[in-house]
Length: 167
Image 1: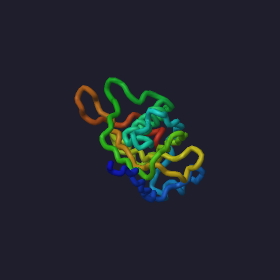
Image 2: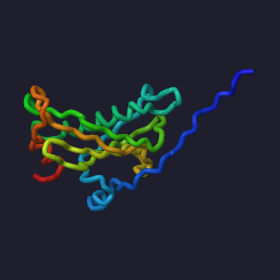
Image 3: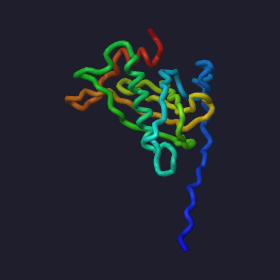
Image 4: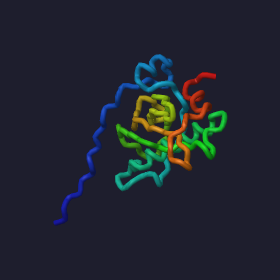
């Protein structure tokens, strides 16, 4: 007699309160997300799935990276050069529910904190058709540094302007 195989149990973790994309900037601030930076549209690929038939946890980081690069490509002005480049200093991903294929996602990026040389970007990955279907949330800390010295440098003016919405 062969041992019986069972499917892993999926546990959905309740999400932290968060503002809906249609909510006002005040509601976003109250939810602790900060100012909206960018919303990226990402399609789940078949190759993103793991043996349990849902998106592998490492792909969440890829979706977040792609979203940050999309945002940066829309920042007017140079955000890196020979003297200043962003590096990831920390990341936090709270997995709230599995993503199944097929799915169209929205990755929402928010400015949670601006430092002298760092930017904390809060993020949410939600279903593109239902922003209340939260797959993950968390944040990353990006630090701008001089690649030759490895020392932090001030945030580029265009990043500060983009993150604060000030012109």
